[in-house]
Image 1 (cartoon, helix red, strand yellow):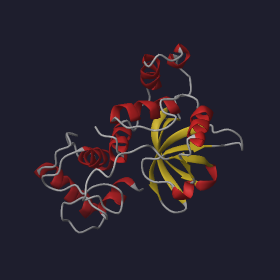
Image 2 (cartoon, helix red, strand yellow):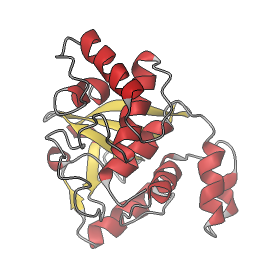
Image 3 (cartoon, one colour):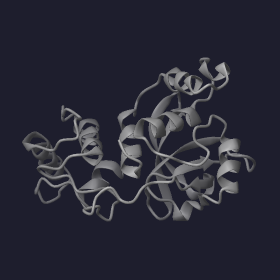
Image 4 (cartoon, one colour):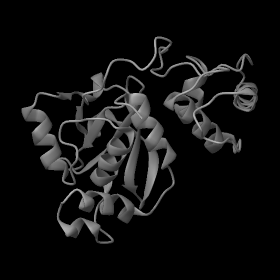
Length: 225
């Protein structure tokens, strides 16, 4: 893995549907934190974000963390916060439901210009993809990512996936195809004929030109709805 938004979103997407919050709590405990966070029923949205960033090898101010207000104030002091309108894929996003301190945290997957798509832990007890209005956002935290993972990075924010491609962006594409149409792909980060065929099948399904390349037009259909 690498310190990039692509790596973070690849890991986060691979956890969609998971409901064992103690998995993320146990990891947080392993860092030497209060054992309270290992108990069942404890809010684990921030511990999910902590686990994702650790698995991806990525860095963000305020992470690791388990308490949203602490994450927020740490990032605020470091001047790493941006508004919802300026959010980018891979940002850590803090929500405020009642006009006070932030209550919930997730990871931005897409900014649509009027609302955001996210991946969040502890949503009805699961890791889930959600759309959120700008009005619910307390702040977004811009992680300390390395430079773009690939010169082929397209306007959607992810590198093209085509025959011969390899890396975390390929894993994200494969995982998304499995979720979207039960493609049965091995999520190994290597794009060969089987992955290309699955991309073409998806492109046909959504009315796109079937070139077998997941790029600027195909990525939004896989991850943006």
